[in-house]
Image (cartoon, rainbow, N blue to C red; front, side, top):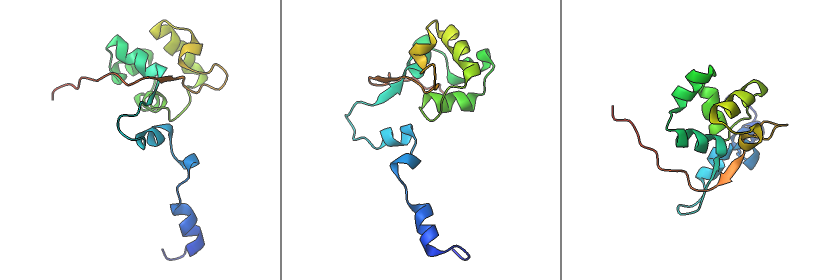
Length: 117
């Protein structure tokens, strides 16, 4: 690229484990290997509600909830009690109460049924 030193360009194109999100790292696991799933996503799937339904009922952004469910971000303090109350569990069941990072569960993700368009 013009104007960018080649050493800097190479550094920008290099991907490290720290650059990858949890979902991207999990996506690189070979088929047949169990993947970690956030407890939050399991609770939502067990209720039978869509991500959009939960986000609207709680008044939180759908995109933010999606990122949290995939392990790509922490649960903001304002959402923690709302989510815990919604699913009827203590905050510690869905995230670390101090940092807000989602709790991971070592089990296969249940099969999801997609709506027909």
